[in-house]
Image (tube, rainbow over all chains, first blue to last red; front, side):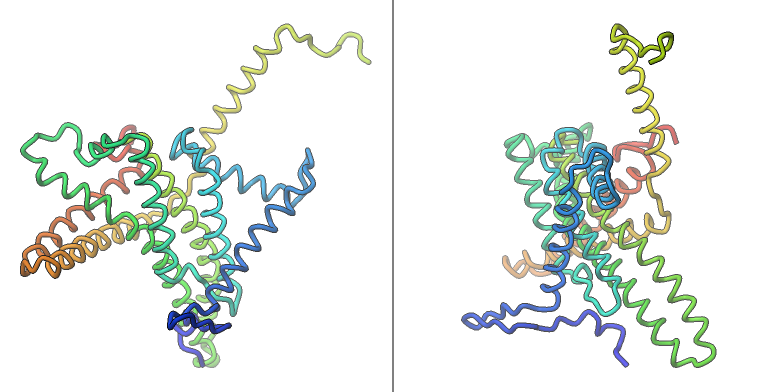
Length: 240
Length: 110
């Protein structure tokens, strides 16, 4: 029987070696392509009819649009809507990745820290660059808490800078840990079902409950990643 | 074609539109507040991740600087402490935000 961690194993599908650098097309990459294609066709097919009274698919597309637009407006403010395409793409990609990961036998690419960390790093670098672009050197005052006594600044400024710099770590670790822990737990309990014979009913019940819970986590973690992206954007735009 | 109940004129159209919009936006904000998902377990988990990320990030940075500058364990120790403080700060701000404050100072209306 496959161990609980084997589902996270990266297997090359097409081996590509360029100058000793391994650029193989892996199962992780395959599921990313599937996620992108799924989101693309979901949105394109959903909006093809331009119906005034939307059908089922169009309703879903409009629902996702409204949902993300509401998030951006509420958490980043009106000025954040400039970044709506990026944030919508990010949300749909993570959400689709999490949901595709719920298909038995599929691969959850959001359960790999390198994937989530790279997304978080892009968000963090982009937001920081945008903050400097908007405010210039004044953006540095973001790291000096207002109202703090001057003699405390040598201690407070490094703490603030560090707390800003660990944002991509916490952002990516959160998504990765939730997806990996959930999937491992499901697999562990599923492994007990056959091994326990008649008493396998108990782990089966837990596995069923965990599956429902995992769907909630899949949505919630995409939501949290998006909300935090919006909040970081808010910090860069409004500087408080 | 009801002669009595003919469609209302356009004279007060702006006023009625504004009233409807106002009512809709009121409804929307109250809905949002009620619908916002909140998982207490998730909140605790997030705070934990913030602290761990702070400590790990600070320590790693200090350790890397130590290795680069050859300053013994001092930057590692300092980075660990500053990282712990930064992690606590992030966790604190996160929890404040979820509880309805703005992340600076006590939450209002709680």
